Length: 299
Figure (cartoon, rainbow, N blue to C red):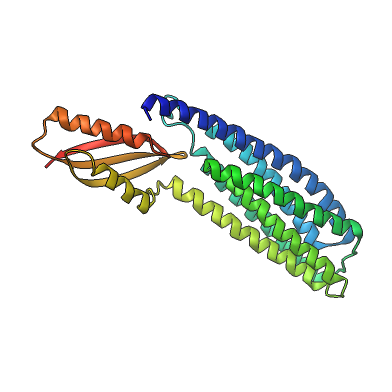
């Protein structure tokens, strides 16, 4: 693929990526606002700490979807004089904000569950309570599949964080449903225990999201297996003796590669630079490579 064709393709991919993530965020906002209202209403009426905790979790999901929308909007901006490689890292900054918000929600849930254990309030089971739990499980499962497919297609951490949150909600609300059933058997303490489990699960998810974003913001190098494959490709070019070093700097969702190569010292300067140019444009046609800097060491 020629460089011009690749630039056109990247521009199209970025637009598709932005629009898909935007749809994910809007769908999440609408769905979670609705779930917050019905979960908290039914939760307080039935005195179910697990359902209240699930409602608070959905409130956190509303915030997460709003942050996804804002982060996606900023990260999709093209490069400018101050940001020559674009604003892609905003995606990871906003992912960290989501992780912090999830921890705050989890702390509120844990406190509420603890108070439930102390007060030992019974859950008022109703058809509405069970219906809300079942509806949430079905809705969240479809949202999870939708977000997961988009996130994997475009390697979008914000969308993948939303997908993981939706998946967590499937298991969480399933646990709520179990606690409701057990309360019918007189095991009321299980409701509070489920609330605690929800809080701990959210904290675990938040830490995973934080670490994924942190690694990119701290300029973590490219995957060793990918690096090995790239080095093998480079060493197949005419005149290349070996690759001295390769470093990769994340620039948003893409990488800037800096490659130092030992070339045959008998080649002319023009010949060696022609090979370097071929290597550069070859690497730029590969996925996730935005730009390449090739330094030649005559050997």
